[in-house]
Image (cartoon, rainbow over all chains, first blue to last red):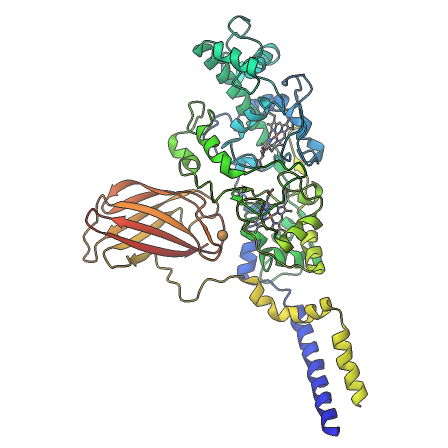
Amino acid sequence: MKKMGLWILGLGLVMVVAVSITSVIGKQSVAWTADEIKLIQSLSLRALAPLAQYPSNKYAQDEQAAKLGKRLFFDTRFSKDGTIACATCHVPALGFQDARALGLGASIGTRRTMPIAGTAYSPWLFWDGRKDSQWSQALGPLENPVEHGGARTQYVQLLEKHYKPDYEAIFGVLPDFSDPKRFLSIAGPVEDRAANAAWQGMKEGDRELVTKAFVNMGKAIAAYERQIVLMPSRFDDYVDSLSLANQTNKNLTDLEIAGLRLFIGKANCVQCHNGPLLTNNEFHNTGVPMPASKVKDDGRASAILAVKQDEFNCLSKYSDATSNDCAELRFIQSDTHLLERAFKVPSLRNVASRAPYMHAGQLQTLAEVLQHYSYAPVAPSGHSEIKALHLNVKEREALIAFLTALDAPIIAPE
Amino acid sequence: MIVVVALLIGIFFSLSMESRQAWIGPLMRPMMTLMNPAPKDLNFATNRKTENGLFNVSFTSNPSPTPLNQIHTWTLHVETPDGKLVENAKISVDGGMPQHGHGLPTSPQVTQYLGSGNYRVEGMKFQMNGWWEVKFVINNGNSQDRVVFNLTL
Ligand SMILES: [Cu+2]
């Protein structure tokens, strides 16, 4: 009995010692290694290269084009019934999105409105990347029946009526679109049957004149979108004063730092949410559930052919790029099987202030997002690339705290 | 005495699951931060013999070091083991991340023979940090061989 008591005493002592040792280690382990610091620095906004040329849009850096683009972005006349502008869904006060699960224009869409800041860096636009430039993207919603819902002859006629001098100062002469016999007021290669028939009935040369002016609208809007920029967050301030020698800066709380440690470590979020925008701008199936509407969406798989055939892609005659500048399109991954239900990785900048989440707003809160990554459900179609992380309550809290530290103002031209 | 020690033990196990994890956590940390380190014995040489020894192959990335998330080109140089240039071979490219079970985000191709045993590989892109394999199958008209390069980003 006495022997047993000694054993237990010994065991108890060992435990006390072990506990005090681990608590010391616990304190020291807050320090980052040189490799970790390098990885953390690669996520800072300071690591973002300044915007360079945009080969497919020679007006991308044009100040006047940006001014015109801004006016077009907010002008509701450019829609079927005169009520929808880009800014209807991309609301400046909400970080250029609309805080809705599904975009709402002429009618309700099937995907969530994406924020705009940072998209000048993305080789692919939309959740499925069916456009390969900002300017060609901008032309999509204008002719989409559930968004602006109009057609291109209508738009170039509005351009002629309200923006002729501004347009001509940038792009040169705007052709005369006022002859109603040559230019029917609602015509374009759109879903609407009458508008489509009207378009097919037009002379090839006239269609070309219309399309060229329409394309320039997109190029002006893109020039404006490039000036919608992200500002440094508390996380970036933290990285600024972080070095191997000095790790005591107070820009992040201990909880946020614990979140960052998980983000680049055990939870490995940085696998896809990497670089200064916290996205690799590629496509992954993460097993996000079907939306309530049960609308099927195979994401990137269907977009590959669409972008290859897009009349406005990088290799098209409306692009200012040479084929050398179109490597992303020329060497596109075309395996639709691999990319079934893969969606573009969203930037995580400002993510905490723009619920709901995912391509159709399936998840309401960041807590639900972390629940998703913890359990990694089976994908509705295709194969999910994520594995269950089994994050505990404290770890989820830490990750959410870290994501919140990525909030920062967005600056756009006055 | 026994009672005191038993109490100590009792206290330890009565701690919530979470705070016990917090005690043990720091010890596991170094393991966690480098999830999936690449196998130790990997050969990261940029100059290698093909699997059956038919060719010596080397690559250079442009830009170098190999960038993340940026489409770029490589130049591949092919010789025979006795130093003869291999000209106008047919070469195909493939690759991926063995630990993640996925391939390349693009479908790169050899687009041009540049002379002097050099080939231009366009459409290279890596969208994640970690261990990548890039495989080339080289066919000089008579025979075919394969080489796998390892790289970490
Ligand atoms: Cu990977």
